[in-house]
Image (cartoon, rainbow, N blue to C red):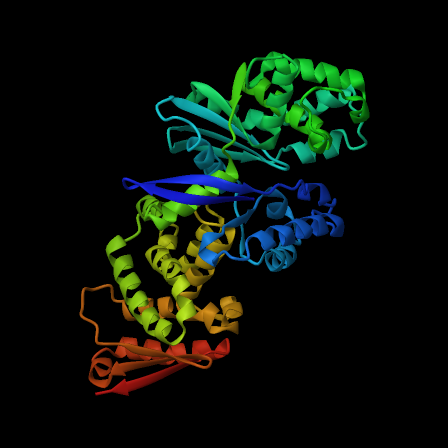
Length: 480
């Protein structure tokens, strides 16, 4: 965990780190053969989060961002663990995709390095995944994530602490097989210099420099000398390399094998190391959101272009959904936090038409739930997916949203907006008044307008039945 303050000077913002807390939890080491996090690893993580939570007690929700990466991405009991973890920390925890992790890593690295250095390759070896990013200055061009990491590799090949030449060779070859999938793409794009981020890269650089294997960073020769030393030692207990910290020892052989595979497969001779990584990237991403430079806005704009969404119609649906939702916010102020998500859902609600008209809302839900969407967490993507699925068709498939107004208010406003704008023609709508009921929404429409629009009237009457099937009430009122 890092705590930082933001300094503003001449319209520019800079982040200054004022506190750091670090605990080696190795959550991925607790993944069972059934891909579930075991009790012991969960308790290690929860203990760390409780301690971190104490440090964060004075912070407001918008000032904290916590994310979970590979171990939670692949764990089958992730939802159960996240619920306990959020209670321990006291703040929401977002599960992010591998590509989003890569973007945030690059963001953190880029802000630690000078601009104008040309194209750089960033390699971030974590516990269960490794991210590869090629970018220039602050803009990433290639972002990929592979399921290889220092903890998972150490578990598979060096679990009892033994480090034989054969085990090291097998670990490297297995990792090279994974990296080979990206080799052509990365070599074709090219880079001027390579950067390593996070603990594995820093630990290997410290060993290389402390033992005189290289003057700075990590070299291919340095990695070979480290491999020779640890395989000659035969066991972790016998490793005596300078610069190797005790808390990194269990993960070192796995990280060494993955980094060696990266060097060999991508033909790297030397790699510099930076302190910037995921955590710094999260801070700068939060800062961007506060300064109207939200990556999620950019992603939505790109999706509108890529999937040829009718932006004019989507904009009208967004405006109406927002108008209805703001009336509900006056009754339930905590709904305000969902306003950006409602806007994005409205802009993307017809993304499924790029596949086909029939069941387009289902196609849209699939795209939004599974596509790489830079800036969005997995939780946010599933929220978008559910809301867009609910905007059309039967509501039985999204019955879980009917639990509380916090869950159903926004998607139901989107659904009503899409209903009123079904004709797609530019036409002035009457003043629509909505208010929250205990288990639904009351909507008031001028009687004469409704009589002049029989299709809309029929659709609203049909909606009453749809809402009732999931336990919600749509009360249709007419007025003069």
